[in-house]
Length: 232
Image (cartoon, rainbow, N blue to C red; front, top):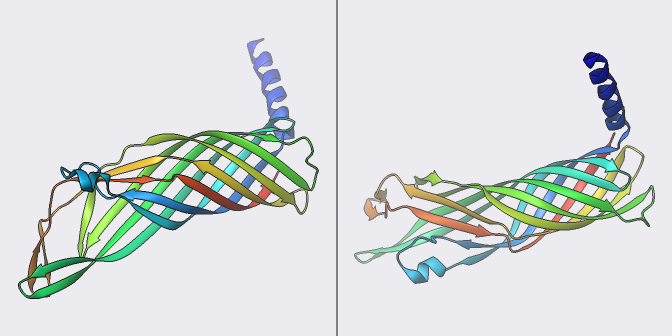
């Protein structure tokens, strides 16, 4: 008896799931800018509060949406955003001014759960939607001074919320193109340190602070998403 009830429920829900519309999208993402704080645990207050606005972050994402009922969707997206900044560390040794190459690389992994509502004036060809949800953000930051690279000590998962709106144009019943505008304000922090306290640059011994430093990235801006959508 229990087996019959289980099979009946399985067939009912399985049929409902198979009849509901599902989409899978592959996206290119552009983040306008982010504020980067090099060391928010520095003993120097000026350094703790110092930040740089870094523009033009790029990334890729994939998302899955499931139509719960007509016009209402839930979705999951996985995203990776990456930015590399090259510069020079200026040190004066004796009468020499040294320009030592440094590189900062910021990679942020994002997983977001969202709910969407399709506007009632949408058509089969054009769909306009709004939504929002919650996201989890984890950073993988590194700083390289010449050939010395920092090691991550702590990289906690940070939570944040987002809202979005978008439009999707369907070429056929199976393939479409979407444009999306997303607003979010996550804070991502990574604590790192150098495993050595000096480097050799052209015969000069340069001292490096081995103390831990914590870098913060804040996306206080808009993200543009362009994606290819597959419906099934």
